[in-house]
Image (cartoon, rainbow, N blue to C red; front, side, top):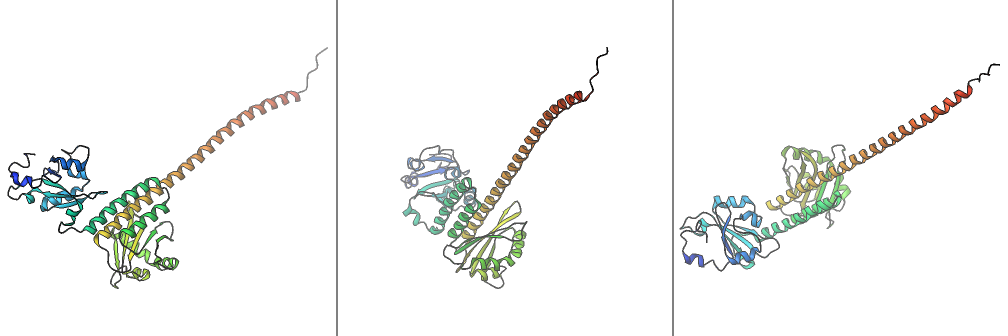
Length: 340
């Protein structure tokens, strides 16, 4: 046990938690003590001296927030039924006024009994993390923008519980924007008609997005900026999320619900996926530009090689002609008769 953190805690209080997998961390988040059950849950690897965030991939903002608020927070472990509960020692042992953290593994039944935890939201966060990992792998392997865009758009619709999704690609060199639909349930019956109806509003929406640099939540209310779009798409709420890369609006990702409103977490999910889409578009366009430049460079090198070969051949041919013309000139000269 770390005397640095627990100099005066009673044996009775410690025995109450010894049967569970627990660990102690100092106020900097570094683990200073853990029991055997905790080590068994973590598996192999260094534990002591490792930070909580480094060991369990926890956002440092959660830890800092917990320090200031003195409130516990939970962390779901992907691909596991275990959940982590991180509690400031000040809250767990108020009498001793200690600084640091108590870290506990919880099984599913214990976790479900913790008051104030939104299990559905927590599971949604795990699903989102898993999908992000899959999409990142796809970005590395896939070179087709169409394939990547369809995957990101489909996950945006799925994870935000939307009825449909649309990606509008912006081309500054062309007035015609390209559309990509996710319409698996045939919610939008006439995609061509929707495209034609949306186009007049795109210019105004894009100006708003460039000015505000954030998503627009369009509602089916006449006072709302995106009211006309919700009418066209026959939905009550619509997230219009910009895909910016270095202040350039590459595309716009839109997802809509026929009924109900979007939660804060759903809006956040769509915004993160739109950021991923902007990176994918920029990355693929860069690859395409590099390929085009490499093609032009190769063509220039071929022409340069042909030019050098032609120059060499012309030089050699000129030498041959010089010899021939010299011989002809000699033949043309009259021969002098020998004197008697």
